[in-house]
Length: 410
Length: 164
Ligand code: SF4
Image 1: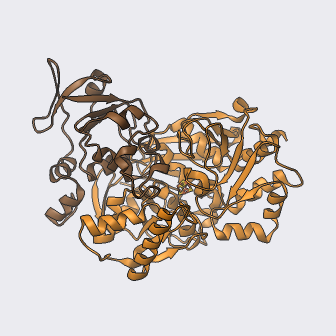
Image 2: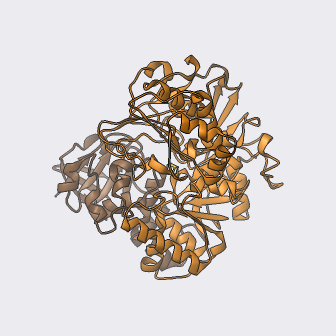
């Protein structure tokens, strides 16, 4: 019987052949946690487990991205605690300004094909962009992984997405991700892995957009096979390959040739409309950033639309690059100055306003069009604020017009 | 007697505890006080230990924030019944020792504000004259819950559920 990518990766990690539905106890290759939760995980380790030692410090990675730089004395103290802990235990730590954990682990090639990466963050599905099995867990599970080097998992069933065709102009991977949320719904992939096929041509940044949003359909992991254009940079181990005999719980086919720009409407990610249905909606803030769409390629798409123009009066365009490297790429080729000349404001690479804690928290009257991945009530600040989700192209077009706009009609 | 707090579908973790109320943001506050602080302020103010949450599909979707579950634990929520649960929430709740049941019949029958008695040792929920059987949990879930959560479990047995 054939195996899905998750079954192959978890079989390799477990040292025996496993199938969906089996329980496994494995040693994850990487255990990631960020500034928001690491202080609490340290507390669980010390107070509930009563230990100080981490089993494999070399497998741990900390990143300072959720409230970076610190916004209050409390967050500053908590971050210093994490820094001290990292130093004492010899744990890799990516400092304030380096970027969002999910971006940095891919840039640093810590997430690689076939690896198991667990993270204290639901968007740890992002590591599937390079063919890793990435999944999010709570603080207690992460603390136990620190202490024992192990975690337990149920091997998930797999939902196969077969993609046909190519994006038309003005349409990109974010539209595909939103379209999938629309079709599969917010819990349609609960407990499953989403495997994306037919995308050998898709660049890395776009794969990251897809994998990050797998969790918005409830998925445990979202894996793009590490084949095609990323294969040289992210070589797969010999035991990992697409198995034509693999058994999928469900297959969904999407044709890109007739995909329109998609917009997720408040207050649920799967409440998705074609851009034409919501065009004209007035907004006050446009946010370009996050692990879903804060990379150089995203900034470049926005810059190409905004070049030589100004954002509409009455709107703020806030840009938060996903990492220092992405920011630097945008600086080197002038993308950044196009955006600044158009009136954008720039914040420190990291999560920025995605979680409503700093650098642009929304007020009651705000209507935000964001390139992020969640538009739950209160996600970015006031529960009265309204959040629309869309691609960088729709975001840039909306910034120009001050109302939700179709980038193809500029 | 315990009160039923009934919710709809897709209650996300931002509704249970908004990110701005995370312990990280308010180190001196009790996260229990933030439970449903914006989505259901009445719960935040008046829920009593032992009260139960009843919800439709996909309860707890969204982020992995365990402090959403921790907030409910601090409020001593007796159990959560839903048509389905989001996976990270389900796991976090078991880990922290909160019983949770996928129980369509109970979800359908119970209304917001109902007074009930929850009798987990005998697998029953009682409302007036009516007695509902609690569905049986998978073995690993029963084992974790009877230990009082995953940490007491691992400390007691020296291994994970399902580990030889
Ligand atoms: S950018 Fe947003 S979704 Fe991504 S890790 Fe940060 S807070 Fe989470």
